[in-house]
Image 1 (cartoon, one colour):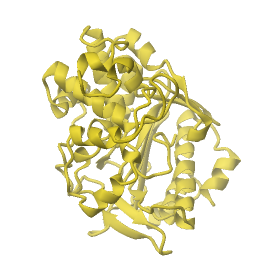
Image 2 (cartoon, rainbow, N blue to C red; image 1 turned 180 degrees about the horizontal axis):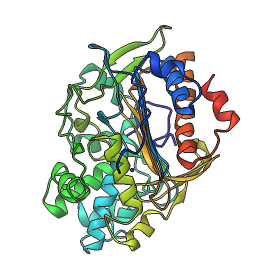
Image 3 (cartoon, one colour; image 1 turned 30 degrees about the horizontal axis):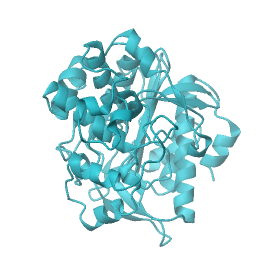
Image 4 (tube, rainbow, N blue to C red; image 1 turned 180 degrees about the vertical axis):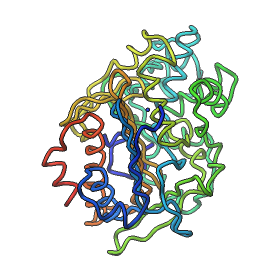
Amino acid sequence: MTTKSMIPALAVTAALVGATAGAAGATAATSTTDPMRDAARHVLAAGAPGYMARIDTGRRVTVTAAGVADRATGRTLNGREQFEIGSNTKTFMAALTLQLVDQRKVDLDASVERYLPGVVPNGRAITVRMLLNHTSGLFNYTSDPDFFTDMEKDPQRVLTSKELLEVAFRNDPTFAPGAGWSYSNTNYILTGMILEKLTRTSLPDLVQQRIARPLGLTKTYFADPRATSTGRGYAHGYAVRFAGGEPEYTDTSSWPIGGWGGAAGAIISTQEDLATFFAALMRGELFSQRQLAQMKTTVEIPESFGMPGGYGLGLFRKDTACGTVWGHGGDTMGHHSLGVVTADGSRTAVGDVTAEPADTGENPGVNRYYRVVMAADEVAVCRMLGKPVPAEVLAALHS
């Protein structure tokens, strides 16, 4: 899920063999010998209440956690909490769609009009594949200039899929279908509608029946429309304003992520569950190898997006200084998350920052936050791959 964030959707799984649990504050913030603890220290210093990361190198699992899971109570973050995974949800939706392709219920190259007649302007020219790989040209509803302004006026409002599409379709398409690439949450609202129509099953039930239960993801669910467990075991998210100099925090954990993120970003999970999901995905445990190949067939991402790589079907290919990884990521009103995996599913990195800037423009605090958080994501990727962190990444982290 992308918000007003300038971060791309990808800012970029199993017994616990070893753990580095810097549970909070002072412990994680004082050590600079471990790159992940160093990353945690700088992310907190940039204004985030909490930071956690889980790195599985295929030989060892380490968990780093720093800061608090709840600013009101001071409860420390331990790395096992549930959190909003934002646009990592898109990979779940793509997986569900590819299961239906295996069952011959969906044709990736059939038009959206075939499955949702009369719903999408120019729907005969837009295919399901175009929805999944962001080549439809449909306007991203969260980019509407009034979207987040209206949300801040009434943060508890629950929008239907139809209402989200109305926001998107009152704006002109970004380009003609298939003529370019542009990240759009609108594509996945439509994907969710297709899934529910063809299966006659709600998205929360589809996630449980077809992904969470088969993989043993006991702490993963689709928020409908709110997270239902926001006490202990939950990482609160915070919208942060930096414009006044000192960060100002608004707890967004009670806001209905399912009421504006929907199929584009409403799943709640944990680091361990999300790592398990991405590893299973790349090992072909959720659908056929043929569909996995389709998922990994990418469209190159424009340079303007700010992330070298490509986008497949609900899956980013990220080309980093330490190597190529696959996965997604997500930004909600209170979280920035990372989920990446190697091509063979043997290594994973999952992380979450419990903050998202709410400023409508740039300022030194916002700019520093983004530099540091993006650098922390890169550190996690390098640690997952067993590579030294490049000097330029460390420089950005320490900026």
